Length: 399
Image (cartoon, rainbow, N blue to C red):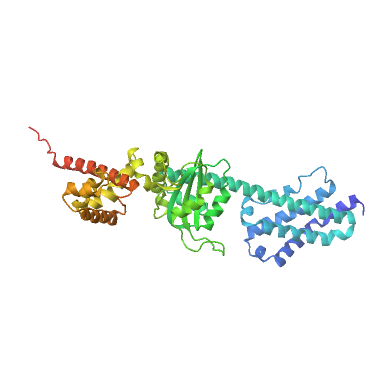
């Protein structure tokens, strides 16, 4: 047959080819038979469009080089989400096999056209899924940025849990926020891989020169090269440190769940803003280690934390501990000078300082911790004096 006769013959058998293709799909692909009728119908339309498209392409392949991509225009958008790229390639292979069995024996040029066309369709399918993946990636990036921004501002709404679920968050427990500088060449995928190996899930937000990571304990599939025990967040931050730019890196305190992450975010952001005030701050540094600087900068959370975690526990435990700590810090951390002021033995001062460390967890003999404790004493005294004044001031009566 010449080309004209071949084209006429192909058009006559196109319906039979589509029917045979659907039958072959049902017989050879179990997942196709399990699909809902509407989706099977959509797949059938794609197969029929592919056969019709081949006939048009065989008629004049140079005039319609985009014809292969048009095959997928017959598929509804949701079909891309329900049929994977691997399954699509299986559909193409079955369709080509059926068509080749029926038409390849007619002529060698027709067989070569079939092989060339099947290659074009495979590339077209890959292009369709690549564009869909790129679109989904851009959407996920925008959604992730929105979620991180909501966490940083504390403006969580009822939609936040669903947005987090849409991102595939695997976190199931404690969460901490890590804030640093954005490197010149940010490798987001490397950060995610590193976090996964450390047993945490991560949300990443880039805000200009500031890089924010929301870290959460995650139940991820374990492999031989992955850690099996939960690492503390400071150690996780240390291992993620190479992914940040130069400058300070601040880790917020751990909170019970992702919905509480704004508390950790506030602390880490406040610490990041004042980290330069500590000349020898480690990298990374915990936000709670920057409590004095944060309090001096006016951070109400830092002030309240110092009072609640240091001053009040000491005051409730023993007034002697507060007095001894005040005297020890005022006397330049000298045991002898403190003992003389309090009229006690230096060993008594040592014992009381040891009790202070046991009660609150900070050691007054270290210079950095002494600064934290002295700031807490000042803030606690101010808060106590203010409370006493409000309590003892009588209300004025009306004449």
